[in-house]
Image (cartoon, rainbow, N blue to C red; front, side, top):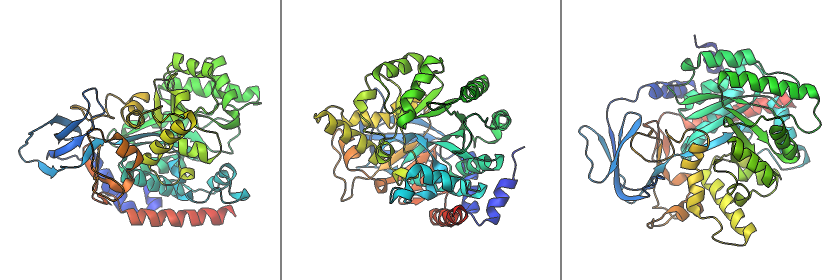
Length: 462
């Protein structure tokens, strides 16, 4: 049975458990009343293209119809005239657990990201995993990110893992939970594979009505590792593949090229694998990634922020069909897919010397439908089509930072839009943001809990 000890502990720690429990209830009860969104400019991100002045009917968890002149008896009707309706953003890499560390990095020599995040992470308790994960997930929802994969690489106990899982469920976001080891776990030491197997076997009790999936954050040994580290990696890989779980691995920084070489030379690449960053990968390495069917997630804001080098879309796009985008966590600031898209587009144009080297529509695709396809979710989310899950966002351009949408509003979205322009968010057919407030979560309470958490973490780490 699903344990209740974790949530009782968090209640004692004065975290926002009441809003969390309310969100869990909503995730399991979609109700029977249809929702009819009328007259929006619909960016379907589907082969049929955009649909101006179009209605979208939602029944339960799914999109029922996309057409003009729709009606539905008993439906809640919302006038969306002059607004942009599109799929929610799909973010496939984020360290949600450390979201309360936002703003602490890069101010001095002793606040470099990797050593500071490792030192603070070592002082986390399960309630801090909960607070950070819920804080990050709630912020993602507020910004129109309806899917945010959680790379949870600070698991120090079963309680830590389950705390993060409870927070994901409480938020109501769609996510894949990557079970990963903490920074000071020796490269030859195994994660608690029995716990992963237990979660897998009982996943129906953890999945929050199908919104959450389980994956494995697999550590590829860096250059110079002992053979025991490679033996550990091979055994973990075989174990997780026997379970049928998807994998995600950091391939980055100065270790990136050697890690990529190890994946290729040892035959470890596969369709179940999501490579994070892949900075410094040579063209022949990216061809090997494509041949074996693996995908790559780019996180340009943090890749630039930490000094991995420029993320050039053209380096990946010709070689790889499966590219998604991610936020990566506190190092990059607040969750904001608009900022990610703008960064990726501007760096490509600036480095290439060609304004049209990549069009904003292409970047928007990788933040929605192509991103969903890259991680095997393209049949369920990423576009506005009948039969798909109703993960949708509505953007109001009536703001000083925006402007009137033209026949193709992609440039307006990539260059001008910001999270505050998102006035409606649906996840799996449920309204989770309306206007400027979350409907199922208490944002101020979650923020206060995150602030309390990081104060305690820093005191224990000093």
